[in-house]
Length: 389
Image (cartoon, rainbow, N blue to C red; front, side):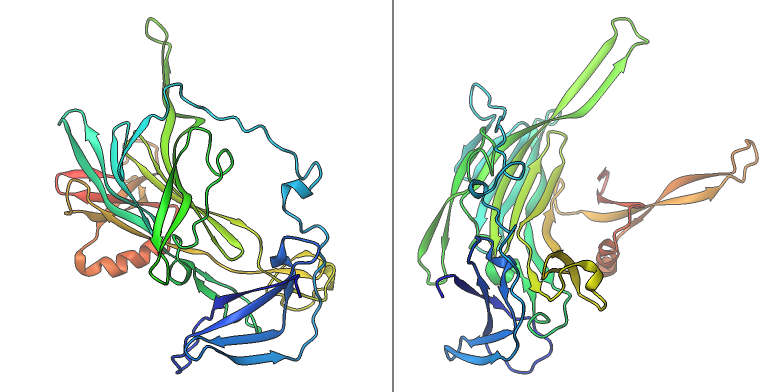
């Protein structure tokens, strides 16, 4: 039993009328590997009622195949080349230290200034992000507040034991509560500055997470802008390297590790991304090769007796944009084909841009169109007498 590890997961709601606070217990067999998520003990149903603090449902009627431990190890110290070579961790380090300053929770870098917070539910929060205008000699607000508000993961296996797997990783588990200490040189480069995170846990007691956040300048060798002009005397060559400031946090929720990045660039843009890594959530099956599968498997056979179950990750953002104030609106721009009807040239057609600005009473419809993202149109943020993208 020492090799059996169990943890509780939330249960998706499918219209049940009861209001019980229940969690499901999933168990795994860790003998021979640290990658316990690839050796699930299936068809044992355990529900725990947290109101009455008792096991409310237990079912153990099926005998299923247990996936092998061979080939599931991910610890570098237990792996042999070519799967586990150590890479040379080189990074750019400025001689005078980091190129940004940290005053309390205020970060200043290049032409940017913003407030950084650490929250139990959503993790890093970027607020009051402003960029300095050299012509007006003042900071101009870009983002009042921004964070990853939710990450929804529905699994696509309707069978018993899997149909209820429908998680809200931020709301149910908390990105801040599941934040892990960042490892220098691996999670963040050598020029990173680390910040501890402080939260109140479920009992109201203060908890410290060391190295919960890191801030660093990213020099990836990319080019922000360049041009060579050889037609003028002097052979003009101008290049601007792409350097950005990154705020990073990692949350581990069960088998998934989420890398939350906020990246600010001197051009005035803010880029946010969530990287998904970790290990798969799998279901044991009797198949040992793909040719044996004759019915819907609800996943991909990733190893003998092991199916990686289909699922989605829906990432939701809270973005309160204040571009020079709060009088902002969305403008959708479409690429539209037009016929050339003037007859002055042989050109038959061309494309142009059509714009449509949202109205307050149509924002719900507009947001629905946003969710049906198309590569043929862009979203712009418009302010009276100003236009940005």
